[in-house]
Amino acid sequence: MKKLFFAMLFLTGAAHAADISVEHAWARATAPGQDTAMVDLVITSAHRATLVGFSSPACRTGEMHSMKQENGMMKMREVDAIDLPKGSMSLEKSGYHLMLVGLRSQLREGESLPLTLDVKENGREIKVKAMAEVKPLTMPMQGM
Image (cartoon, rainbow, N blue to C red; front, side, top):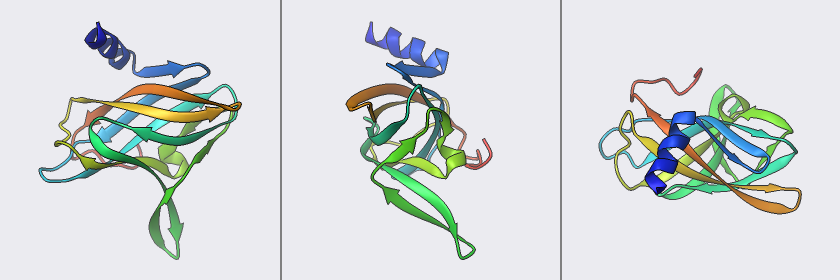
């Protein structure tokens, strides 16, 4: 039954919990020995909310990062939280992404990657389950 649930979740391409949904989650396949990977996604909230963390059984830990242009160079920094507006927000286009650190195995094209997002909304913490599609290693990270 659990496999059927995840298969249906993956086929719909979206995950929902309360007033929060996740769509278009994806990661690029990794090279042998690579132990980190980025995940981008679109998260939609019916209310202002805050992404306070995430996890995946595919990695030791999950980190949230911002990417900003500073003095002509892209700088990546870990953040404790990501403010989510009412409506949709593409992590990629907003300069944020999720980072899988300490991958347990190589990510291969065509696989699906389970994620659990921790979101605070209206004083309550919500766990949002999602699946990220693993795209080809040659897929550019920007402009998806």
